[in-house]
Length: 186
Image 1 (cartoon, rainbow, N blue to C red):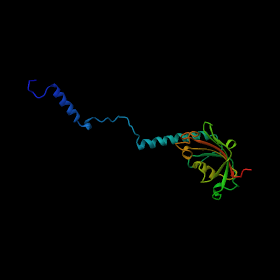
Image 2: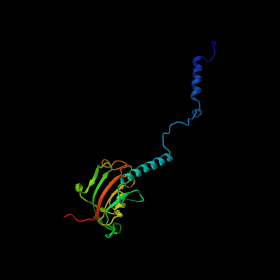
Image 3: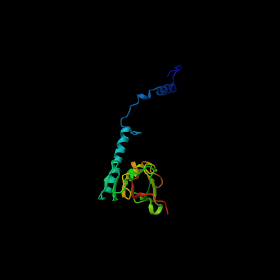
């Protein structure tokens, strides 16, 4: 460059860097194959449907050897071990009736949550006790004096959160219990 020219090499580089700052970020090519960072609603629905099918399959396989098994509309599998259809139906009892559950609640790996011999019977009032809805459903279908075993899916037990540390997330609960009227301790 000749002396007296307003731009030198440094000026030319400076001008190029300014134009780079002024460029439009939307001029960059958009890539369709970029990984998603957030799942879509469709992705989440598909995931939960697949997970629900896996849980249902596991429950079905565990209950497949129960000769008198029944399935409720909510996915609970149960078998009546002792059935006394001549006795009063629990759902027909007056509101406020307290029942006594001689029970064993466990996880599928046989880790025991609570048992009657270790913890004593559970006093239970239908639609008032704070056990999850699946327990109310099974007990509400019983007659006084019935014994039942059941597999309660997570959606009807402690759900996606579980009840740490005893009950993990999405736990299927295995239940064995006898259902009768509450008796005052002697």
